[in-house]
Amino acid sequence: MYTRKLFLPLIVSCAFVVVSLLTCAAFAETPTEPPLSWEQFRDQTGLLSKEAVESSPLGGAGGYGENALWTVVAAVLVFWMQAGFAFVEAGFTRAKNTVNILMKNIMDFSVGSIAFWAVGFGLMFGKTNGFLGTTDFFASGDSTWLYTFLLFQTVFAGTSATIVSGAMAERTKFVAYLLYSLIISAFVYPVFGSWVWGGAYAGSGWLEAPAGGLLASLGLPRFTDFAGSTVVHSIGGWAGLAGVMVLGPRHGKYGPDAQPIRGHSMSLAALGVFILWMGWFGFNAGSTTGVTGGTAWSGSGKAIGLIAVNTNLAACAGCNVATFLTWLRSGKPEISMSLNGILAGLVGITAGCAYVTPVSALIIGAVAGLIVVYAVEFWENLQIDDPVGAISVHGVCGTWGTLAVGLFHRDGFEPKRLLTQAIGVVAAFVWAFGTSFIMFKILERTVGLRAEIDDELDGLDLSEHGSEAYPRDS
Image 1 (spheres, rainbow, N blue to C red):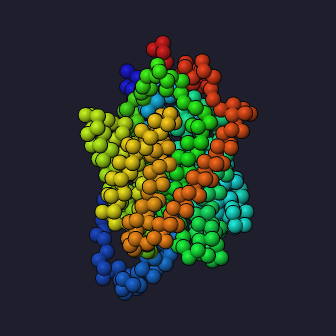
Image 2: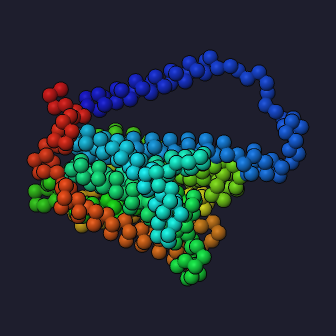
Image 3: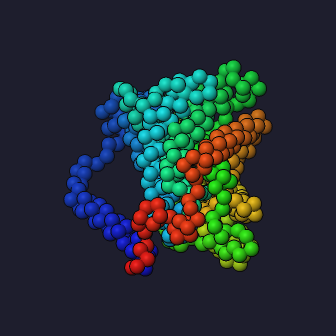
């Protein structure tokens, strides 16, 4: 009954969209002219060869409009992942906390977007002092690319912040959640991001191996994380680990009288994973920030097809391995682990999606699906209470995916590349876990981090928000 009530508005909205599209298609004008042949195109444009097309604004040299459009569309796909995270977290947790979880996923993006625009973008992409950016705060100006790039990076920052929500679900004070979402979006995520991606705009991070830097002095190549297995996902996962350690487990989760705490809606969780899977095509392929120029292996422009295929193959491999491994061990295919297997594969391929072959993408996704099963058990045995498996999916599998670039790069195995990747993932853990642990300790001793025990037992929907997703008197 509850699921039916929740899905009714969604079904009506989808039906409205379908009817609208069919109506538009019915009234659309049919093209009256056939597409140009190559000869006609050549004669009309004066571009007499493939090389001439590639060097024109229609090819690699130019095409700003197309590149900006693709980047904005990809940003919208990544923004849609917020809904996916909200549904996954809500489905994997108890019904009495659904409003709280939805509010967290609404507000972490609303608070985080402003924090990232005002401070985070400058720290991440401004001119660097060697540690972080020092310009482009409150980003504005006449550059059209600035706004396109800012939007794309903002939705990435939102993803990193919302990962923490799942790990700390069902027992965190809402005001504390708002504060740490702001700090992660404005400081924790952008500083590490500047070390890896600062050169994408005006900065230059030490993991980009600039001349005279640490990696260059050691003769090591730059750290490679194409779309954020470490920069986005592991940073969020390790911040979540710090939060869980400070926060403690949910009441009744462990101990002699402990009972399994099950999620209330696998329908919501599955829908959320499908939304995330869809959004990941924007997450990974959108990281080209363009559709013109490049080659299939360049990580830009024309690489979007390869990136999208690798993304999909890794997700499927992760799902299959997690499903059949769980089936083999327990005698039943368990849906929550299948869903986390998909996410594990997606996180795992994110670092190397532009630099590995489809066969390697399958292997990376399959290993991620294997890892996530055992990682969830590992944290459970340590009594690290992560209701959705965020630490395993994002922290552990993000680390695996980043190291996998050094193992499966299309240019071949290079020990130096693998060493750089290892340095990067260690730096990410030290930075994200260390700063987040301090942050959570400060919040614990000031505004308070954990909800009162009576509120936790009754559910945070009423105590924190005064409303319920599933009213108890209905």
